[in-house]
Image (tube, rainbow, N blue to C red):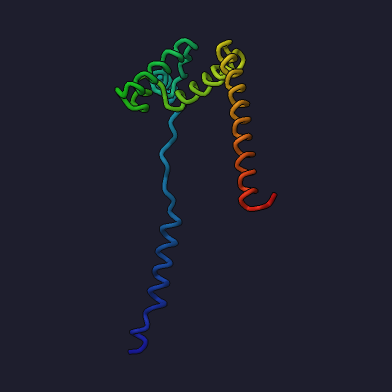
Length: 156
């Protein structure tokens, strides 16, 4: 009876034989399509690609860019819409908006630095004179206060 209960190696041998038979039989593939069938599909896909968002991006002129930027800024400042909504309403992406904004801003800053108005120059001179006058008054007050403290402490 001990031999009848010991069926482990026989079952294992039967399972390995079954695995070998199934692996030996290979699956048959269907034949490939000919290239002539694929060409009309490609032509259709090119026609639909022109309508899809992955098509060549549109180029805007400087005037169109400035108009769109002004439109977005006015919508945001008037609180009629959020920045993201205003950008989408203008028909551009957020990345495009920030690129345009970055390229426009340095030009404005250069113009302001190169050409100060005569009024601004006069204001600057006046502020410098007032600054010098206030520094002299402060210096006199500090000298007087310092001298008074020395008398109280008996350092003189």
